[in-house]
Image (cartoon, rainbow, N blue to C red; front, side):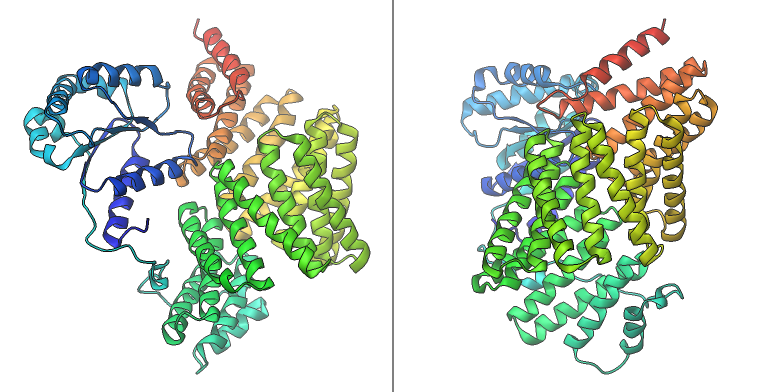
Amino acid sequence: MVLTLAEEEQWQEFSRHVEWAERFCLIILFVEDALLAGQFLQRLQNQLQGQVSSLHILKPSRPESLVADIFEDLRRCLVPHTIVPCWLELHQHRSPEWQRALDNFFARFNENRDRIRRDYPCPFIILLPVAYKSRLREIAPDLWSVRNYTAQLRLSQQAPVRRSYHEYVTPKSGATPLTVSEQALMRPEIREWQRVQYLEMADNELFLVTIDAFDAALESGQWALAEGLAQQLLTLSHKILANEGETASALRKLGIALDGLGNIEKTMGRYDAAYQAYVSCLQIDRELTTNANPQILRDLSVSLGKVADVDSILGRYDAAYKGYAESLQICRGLKDCLGDSPQALRDLSVLLNKVADIDKILGRYDAAYKDYAESLQIRRDLKDRFGESPNMLRDLSVSLNNIADIDKILGCYDAAYKGYAESLQICRGVRDSLGDTPEVLQDLSVSLDRVADIDKILGRYDVAYKGYAESLQIRRGLKDSLGETPEMLRDLSVSLEKVADIDSILNRYEIAYKGYTENLRICRELKNRLRATPQILRDLSIALEKQADCLCRLGRDGQALAAYQECLPLLERLQAALSYDEYSERIAKIKQAIADLDK
């Protein structure tokens, strides 16, 4: 079902109220169109998959026990410290018996509203018949006065149509001239774009120059310039579409522009906007596959992977796995069709890694190892066939790390160390060849951390400290030169924690405390800037726990207790969102620490 523009705006406003709710929030939807209500429900479920809350759906069926059934269900399913929105469907019943039941329910709800707001600190989304609107105001005037959002889901007067391509993500209005720094002008693609942007040039030619400049800006960390160029690409693609019509060439340019927009939005941590851009690109690629050629199929595979990347970041692992698996299937088909070309083989190796990443997250280590091993073999073969180009070596380094990750998880530390050490050696060689580019430095810092992880496990603390410290120095430099993107901040946070861990092991608690405190500040900043994804909450919980442990060793029991008390509800919230046990051991440890300190 495709929403009209008015319905889309209504959905956006509704979803914002749910997402921003941090305590009791009353949302009432008066339903005329049950299909539209179902679409809102489906979208809300998809949105909440990326958070550590879920959606509790109630569909009462017995009017005679409506009040008791609802509150018993709420009591039974309440999760401490967790905001779990409640979706209560009461809109499908219009008999006199149900009218009386609704009157009784809202009268009781109105009388007990203060207790309900205290005991159930979550969004209540109540769906009602349109005809009940005036009755609700009469039965529960106090409740009506404290509602947070009300909407009427009307029957659409517009027949469903395929969405116009001009309704996809549109350029922002009022664009300002772009400022190009001297550092940006070191890239020839950006110099060429600056040279031609005010010349008379066909839109298609200007599009090609602009996409090259955008890629260069994104690669070199010129974020503001990349954002501006992404908007220019979007403007150009819509202009080309208007002039040429919905040709395959014009649609592909729109898809490229949307993909670029998604890339910069994702880099800046605006995951919802990135997802919207990637999904729009994917829809275009799917429609273009009616006349599929290898390039169109490859575009589709890439778009599936980009959508799945955001699903993975937001913790929607089942959706991510499904997207990666479909993309992998396309890559295998292209390899069968085109043979063992370098591009087809590299695409296949990338998707094998992404599928394996989800298997690893979900604890399916045998499946992950199998796909990582296939990817590694492909990359070794490519190196043997085509030589040691920097990109080829970087891919090989990533695959070596992936295999070693599984070895480490399974306790095979010697094998893990061997893989990590080979990867680190490659990264140092690539740095010698290419210099200190952001990508090269990022890869080097990752490999330094992983080798040091094994040194730490094996008790080689001085060696581990040296590796962690070098990685931290690299990441501070990257932050200073490229700015505080979410990815950059998280990498810095990881390095601070690892260095502080060694300081703590070696009883340098004051120094460790300083590192843990800086790490905690970054974790809080990321939580405030971004959505409360499982990764962000997990990082924050670890930072709080490690700081609390260090405070205990320093004898600062009051501060330690406060940190443990802040950490505990985060862990309970994370565990409540899972169908398997991951956090019970940490929860038990922190509860014991709180009990010991609270005596």
